[in-house]
Length: 304
Image 1 (spheres, helix red, strand yellow):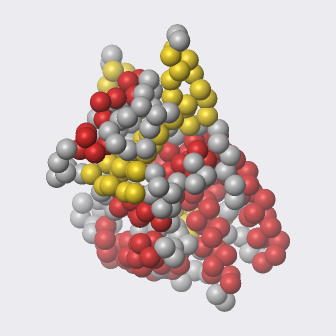
Image 2: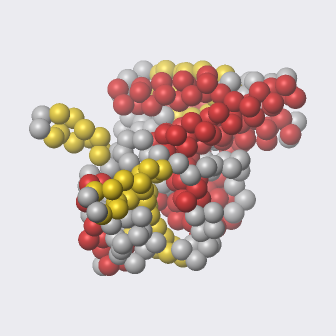
Image 3: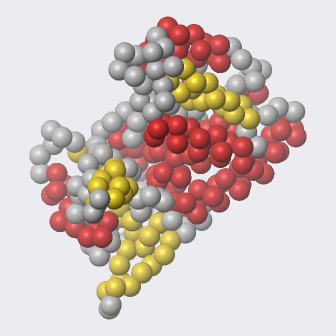
């Protein structure tokens, strides 16, 4: 699937500022292509790809994420089901739900919405999902496959980041990339994907030294730390590409606003290209979840 580059180049007086990488439009392109691919799959195999989303509790943010995922699934022709469990549900009850979905041939992908309540072991829940149905790409078997370069189900957010980067750089080889953050969900898999694309990769985190100096050398910075506006123009060299994964809620003049880990207004005068928040990485994450669900369905049909 070829993803086209969609960005805007703005000017501030005589100064050209960063191209704004429009993840929302690129994600919509992917969704439109998936509509055709899913219909083709349904026609050939007489099977509708199935996605099960499991939500424990009633966290408002999680409910919004789940609603958006189910909406996108419907758009591309994927059958989705939502499984709601009370917040007091035990770990055993949640894993029993997952095992039931593992055994359901109409379900090709399983997603457990994170974070989970504190009394539930997130690691045990992730490991309970069958690797073939792990459309989040978090199961240890899929993580190992990612590191080995053989993964078919990749973590959705880093996957989306790679598609954004490849729309700018068809060949990433030789680029110096710095990943800020080392989470299992974004930072670590992001570093693996960049390495497989032949980048030179540095991961920095809370225990790293000279973080700003390391970032200032990078051709590509991927920010995924969950700290609002942490990265400013002092961290980057002129002409760098900045992918902002952060989604942080801040209060500005009494109003709630979404901002990234990057000080957008400061950095756009230095970067060559940058993703906005919102409208950058977020829509790509959901689009890649749909891609993974179709991939999982294809894999399971071919293995019958």
